[in-house]
Length: 117
Image (cartoon, rainbow, N blue to C red; front, side, top):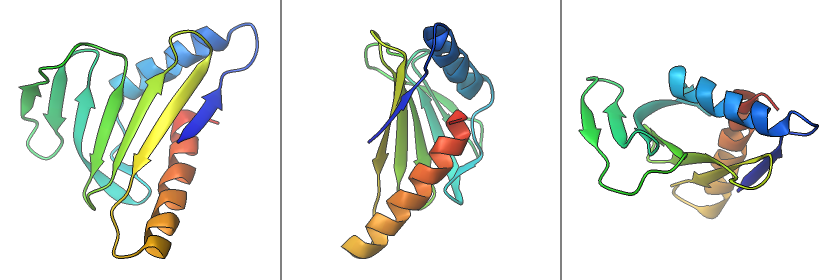
């Protein structure tokens, strides 16, 4: 999990702007791996990036965004509802623990850049 604080008086506005930018321009890759599916829980839409096919997400709406990667990993980004903080959750799959930890570091570092921190 990564916690990213949007400091200052305009923190909540900055957090909203980051999420708006992610929605309007989803990343093509994270950590060197292609994003295969973008799930926007705010609009209840899941988009396959290769075909453009859109399906409905039958869950309650939330501000979370989820990115499935071509290596089986996943990144979920969501804003806090009470403070100027964005959380990123990483799920990694690898042959062993050392490789998984290295993969998480790479994905986390790219997520920091993606969020502009």
